[in-house]
Length: 337
Image 1 (spheres, rainbow, N blue to C red):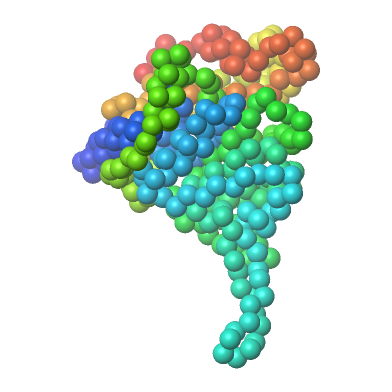
Image 2 (image 1 turned 90 degrees about the vertical axis):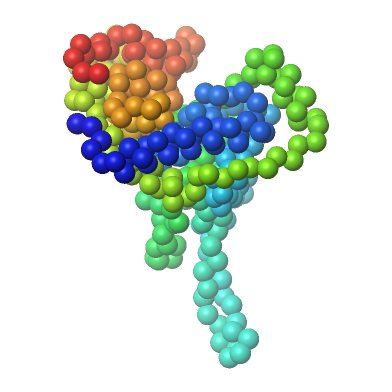
């Protein structure tokens, strides 16, 4: 199966060109971090949400804020703190008096979640009750307040950040909420040459002018296009095998998984492996998904869904190491792409 419509081909070309233009614009402010930027853009094209983890000062917030400017989307940032309430995110009903009649009525005041791109900064610093205020929005793109449901404007994305080195006073995200993030993106210190460029550029006057070639409606069209990309059955079964093999109770699970994994990847992991691979194929100029596309998506899709046990923590076995082993152990079908 291939794209048959000339409109689909033209839209795919526009998507690929748009990605390159967005990267060019981001590079006016962001130095390096090519892999991080690539995964953030795949999140946009699929219509998912991503968790970005890294120590302070690595441009986590800057990347997302700059991206919102480049694609001209409404951006809001919430600093998550222990005293943050769900209504601080979603909004609430307020009593307002009509100046003309003097009558009082309840009026809904939208919260910062009513945006196109929401940055949940240090999401693990707020209690689970407040964290859960994002769940419905992330999955359904709507919020329910006082029994009334409000639709969020499309496109809608949640990017959340975490600091991995400060654990005191934090509230780890529950597994159900972690699973709603398409990618777990790790941002690390850049190489010395790139770090030098960061210091040089950020200590000078920076006033970039962004050229906007991709709009919100374009992103919605790209998301629909991604879902129409054909995937051969062996490629899809390979993605499913990676997810199933990560589960310690599965018959296919290797000894390493049974020894170190408490809970394996969900069905949503296999879905996101395929969706991410579809977007990667399109932005690479291809109209079909390869096994390599699936393998490239494995770490960001699985690292927050494969939960290690105490034995793994005590022996220093990381989730990335387990994913590496899964990629080695799960055979790539000989037929297919």
